[in-house]
Length: 145
Image 1 (cartoon, helix red, strand yellow):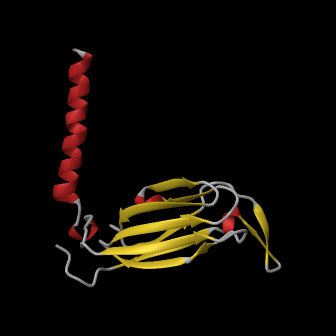
Image 2 (cartoon, rainbow, N blue to C red):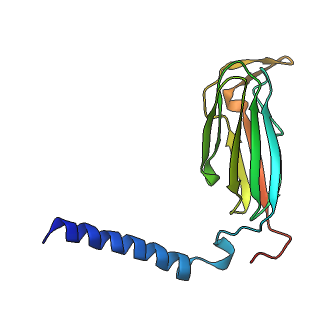
């Protein structure tokens, strides 16, 4: 049998399986939604503090988040939000913007994805691993289409 027929057949099975899952097996509560609400936030990596400000962001499921992220440090940072496919590097003293829809309920970490050292802040040792924040996604209060 021709290898191209096999590849086409496997591709059709994978795509067909995905369509079947999304239309038949995926529950209504788990389907991605977008409410049309846009929420703007600003997250700042403060100079030599190894933390995000704010450390917690609260939104509703289906909200579109537009986040301006500022790096005040003299070295690179990165921001990653695994659940929403965000991963970007932030050069020293720069600002980046990310945008995504909070399609899932729960608490999701955002963290520095670039090793950025350590230091002492107010007598407490802080490191790259302390740069963790949380996006709390709660159920939508407006009806979701």
